[in-house]
Length: 261
Ligand code: PEP
Ligand code: MN
Image (cartoon, rainbow, N blue to C red; front, top):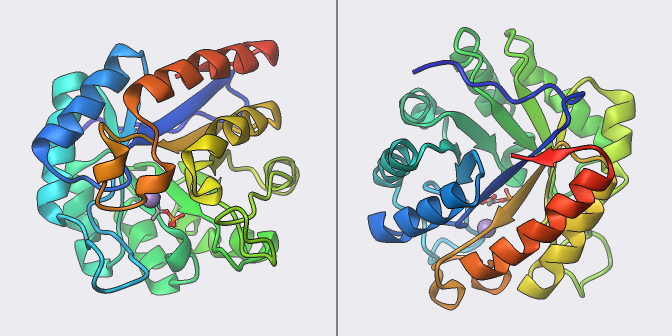
């Protein structure tokens, strides 16, 4: 696989990692991939190993889901990123996707972070490192070094909302994390706007705020038919909703001299 890099944060780009919460089938993923590719985006996300709150909820298609992502990515010219939750899956998953995601529940799973750091020390495959939902920014910035100590510089931090007393939203999006990460670290920062929103209606405004605050990337969940989604049904956007939002996001990005990729 050719090396793929997350752009340096000085770049005039905002990457959008859009795609369904879970990879559910070849058809479902292909529809999203085709749509994103036509919109001119370069990445697609999808969850194959799902870290669900309940063991009785859909756990994901596992490696089969990762292969569905690989095929759709190749077919539609998109780079792929998926979450890994277990040290034993890391090497195999990295053979099929471009980038790897570490979820909020694993920010402090230091053994997993070390395995991912070692597994990408030569390939320099991108690693998206989410903030723990109850972690301070300093804890997060310290944990990221478990990955980077082996030499992969292509790490992007991802703010995805933290737990506070507020429960109108699913999590409280800490927008200040964007400038603080720029001030205190050398890594680019992504903002996942879907998981803090918890509802489709809030996603667009959070996305605009994140770009305006200087985010280097956004993560947005998009599903062909959100109401039937096997996970996170209430917060995913349809392709037409996402396309409309993308137009607005392009305007916000252009106002600060950036373009969306
Ligand atoms: C996800 O992006 O699919 C996900 C599970 O996110 P988080 O780890 O932020 O909950
Ligand atoms: Mn989700």
